[in-house]
Image: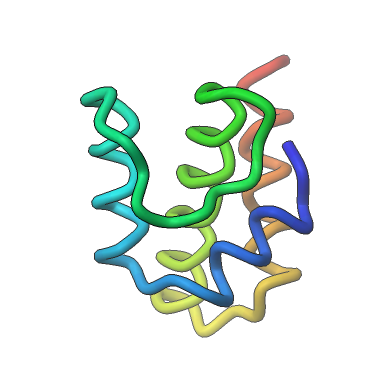
Length: 80
């Protein structure tokens, strides 16, 4: 997980674009946006994190750093 990549996606793309990119990646369709990552798994991680952050930002009026903190807590919680 690369925080800078997630921030870039949140800053540059709207929710519809990110959801479409997620679907394209899952359907093995070429991405039409630039998603940082070494492989499809890392790209999917960044897209899903950006979607999560955008939802939290809209829902709870958070800034990107607060949303990323929530996402990180969610990931750590799933690993415990």
